[in-house]
Image 1 (spheres, rainbow, N blue to C red):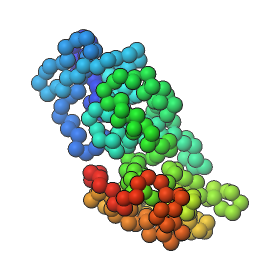
Image 2 (image 1 turned 90 degrees about the horizontal axis):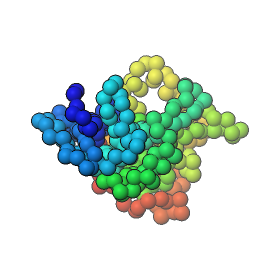
Image 3 (image 1 turned 60 degrees about the vertical axis):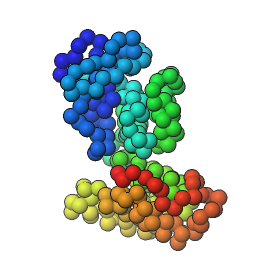
Image 4 (image 1 turned 45 degrees about the vertical axis):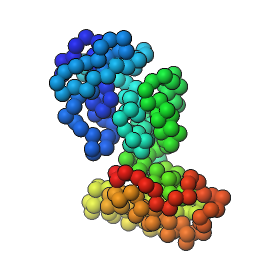
Amino acid sequence: MELLPGSFVSHTTAAEIHGIHLPHWISHEQVHLSRGRQTAGPRRKGVKGHRLDISEGDVVEIDGLPVTSLARTWLDLATVLPLEDLVVAGDQIISEHTRSFGPPRIPMVPKRDLERFIATHGRSWGIQKARSAFDRLRVGVDSPPESLVRLILEDAGLPEFSVNCPLRDANGVIVAWTDLGCEAFRVCIEYDGEHHLTPEQQAKDMARDAKVAEVEWAQVKLNRLDLPEGGWRVVAKVKKPLLRQGWRPGSQELLGTSSEFPNRRPA
């Protein structure tokens, strides 16, 4: 891709270059290019042009191509993505954890740095949505479906579920990790992606399931078939064990709204 002087890749095109997750409905045929606010926006066939207020460090070079930085790209995505998809992208960018197995996960942008970036770009387009999305980001998320499930539960008014939650035995020893966990009612959620279909992973899952049962947590397993149709299947499947574990709608632990089934766009 050859760019005219002063132009740089931005928005969803920059997100693709950085490896940021985007919803399936985003068009990959149109290239997003930007220039500074004081110049005319790019005008070329197949190009969506933008004019942006750019600060120092907002544009970086990747393989010789000028591209908006990760933080700047996430901020610009606020002008083209719904809130839930912006949260999904943000969770990916700030994801960071160290567990008792596997290598530590290093964030693409630490959460504190993203927060600082937003604070210094208060006049940028999309800043209000970015601030709202930032408040809902959580450190430690491993996949986009985990973010979507958490948002569905929050919007449905169910108790708070922590991401990347450790399950401990009576001695405080971590026996398993779960995608989402509600310690108040000892309910955990595992999202099984395609890699869970391999024999090796299924054997690991069975061993983990046994450990979850030993520490008397109720486990809910979800997959891609549960996410469409507004998330009502997720809410229904998680609500049942919560009720069995002692949660009651309207209790002090209840967070969010009281709507049972959120009105959400299918994932």
